[in-house]
Amino acid sequence: MLCRFLYSFELTFPISFHFVCNSLKAWNAFPIFASSAISFSIAATISSFAFNLPYAVLDGNVFRVLARFFAIRLPIDNNAAKKYFATLANELLDKKNPGVYNQAIMDFGAVICKPQNPLCKICSLKNKCKSLTDGLINQIPVKEKRIVKKDRWLYYFLVVYNNKVYVRKRATNDIWQNLYEFILTEVKKEKSSNDLKPQKLIKTLPGNNVYSNIIISKKYKQQLTHQNIYGRFILINAQKPLNITGYEPVSFKHLKKMAFPKIITVYLAEQGIVL
Image (tube, rainbow, N blue to C red; front, side, top):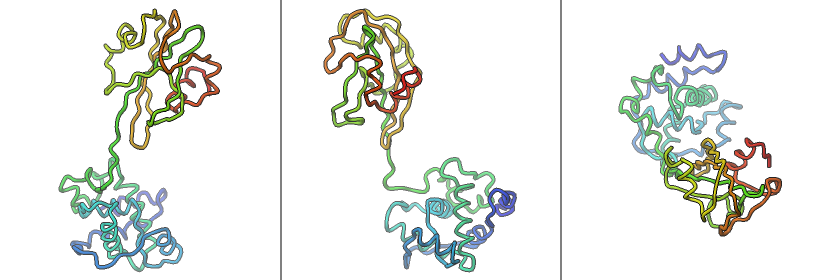
């Protein structure tokens, strides 16, 4: 069973997990309506750990274990659902050993019932886990406010003329406001290898300039709260100055005095230009 499996981890995780196992295995039904609610906070953790008082901790790991085991589809970031989980957590709590139980269920969620890639195959509760038997492991716990990240593809041209490169300050109501950037082309999806051919890239630049020594960087990524930013950098030499609105030529030495987004500073650092 799960308990015996976890005992092999005693040296690494010196917690008695049998409190969690016994409580979950014995729990064959739970109330449809929560009759009361306890405010779970750091105080509950301190009360049970330091003073062995019977208060159930309800952190992210506990939410996940309970939601998955019982296949509870209530959104855990909803206040009414939090009260429901609070009642359930306290009914499952081992009142004689609350500190050990709380630590055990939190560690169980962190080690076995992980947010991503949970160890269901070796979990001794797998035959009783309703989410697993119903095929809902990846859908539970439910959140009302799941962040849907937008992918953006940015292609920066470092056009060099007379040992200077063209930059501008971002001034729109978008990410990285007031930071600097190179000549930007944004597209809806990643460019194919065919689109990255020099002759096609040159067509995206303004004017009838002559370009040479085109070097295309690897793909870079920067994660923001609501966006995944992907970018490539195209270093290219121009034979005459560019006539492009909003951009100005600056020396590479002067770049060190400018503030750039992280994705650009990482690229420049790899090119030996430390800002």
